[in-house]
Amino acid sequence: MRRKVFSIVCGISLFFASAAMANTKSLVRVSNLKPSQISQLAAEGYDIPSVGRGYAEMVLEGPQISAFVKKGHTVKVLVRDLDEYVKNVKKTQTKNNAYYTYDTMVKRLNEWKEKFAGICRLESIGKSHEGRDIWALKISDNPEINEPEPAALLMGAHHAREWPSVEVPMATARQLLEEYEGNEEIKRLVDNREIWIVPMVNPDGVTYSMEKSRMWRKNRRNNGNGTYGVDLNRNYGYQWGNVGASNSGSSDTYHGTGPFSEPESSTMRDFCIREKFQASISFHTYSELILYPFGYGYNIPNPDSKIFVKMASEMAKFNGYDPKNSAELYPAMGDSDDYFYGELKMLSFTFELCTTFIPNASQIATFNGLNVPACLYLIDKAGTYGLVNPDGREEIVNALDLPGSLRAIADIVNLFGNENNIGMRNEALKQLEKVSQRAASLVVEDMKNGNSAALEAVKNVPQASLAMSFARNRVLFEDAHRSGSIRPELVQMLKK
Ligand code: 0X9
Ligand code: CA
Ligand code: ZN
Image (cartoon, rainbow, N blue to C red; front, side, top):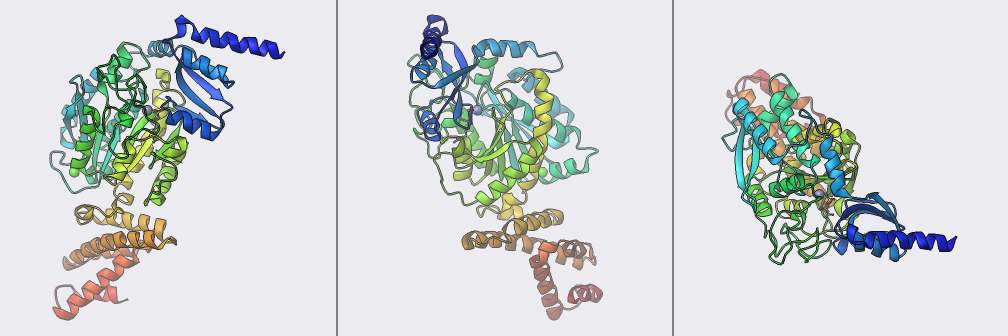
């Protein structure tokens, strides 16, 4: 019996070591792994799309598979030839149900630009290594103007072969544009947020993966030593380095020659610095996860973890995914979320969509349907939790409308009301004070115009007691010092 198992194992290992399999990429589940072994594999730069209890699913070439078998691991080949698999997925596409290519995406974006000119604007924010435009669609009222509105960003395809990651941002854009007239909630988001969609961060890689039918992951940088490509999700400049990233150009997790060495990642950096986003989602496949920073090492303190955990678990209610700190998947340095949050204080999430890199085209509507509502949630909450960060949010807070400021107040109080960490509580209180001052100003203004609607609205939000007392103090002060600017019966309403 022993001998039989041994010979089968040798057989597998010989087969994968054969010339035929040497350059073939397979999707393989390696099990009987301790968590420390999994993170060690990630640290060594293996390409690991999914991790579970005691196992890792990895993209491996023949000789690598043999090596695992020889070491005594249980190896199960899930997809023998990933090239073949992609070819078969392509066959599932129909004229009306197909993954976006770079060209069909550009065409669709331009159609939207014409058709919905009043609420969107299309901009090339930079060029890829091979010279393709990296397109960004802004969706907002007055799209030509930079307004002080909370801003949210959706990104697809840092990784080439992860085609569904283009679909979800595109589907979200479509819903926002097509339902603007006729869906009040959508109109509220478009009118009160600046929403940016960058559906294809890595157009060269996506095109390569589609046309050459390859499991390509990286961009198409010629590394000069016969190897191609930098992993854009290892090339961002916050804690850029060697953990979970490789310094070898042939590796699928090659981090590049330095932080932001790549035009695609530096384009995203400059764009995000310019737009000052409150929140973002970067889409990947696969594993059905919602990840949040930090990801460069285990147990790195995240001052806003409470907000991340809350938002991730709320978004998980829409798609059923598992919310997780990204280092818990495996630590990896130089990913986009760590830079966006660590450097720019964006509430940055990564979604690992689906249960495989590229599901059959018949699944597109299903994964879009699960994930677009989560995107709308994030866009909304960019205007509440997104204001809790201290830096540079003043301008937005001072421009919030009354319903917007009341939502922000309710969210902040609900999340931090029972907080026993004094530091965190103080931070939240500072923001609460700013938003409450804004709401109070709107109430007082409204009262000076002889109205009580804003006052009633604030009274109806139980968490807005601070805003209420600010409003009361201001009105009573003004009443005492220059009587007559607010009608006495309105002042009476406040004295009650
Ligand atoms: O490894 C990645 O870049 C992402 N997974 S994928 O299978 N799409 O390649 C996950 C990155 C999560 N971030 C960290 N673990 N730091
Ligand atoms: Ca606007
Ligand atoms: Zn990815």
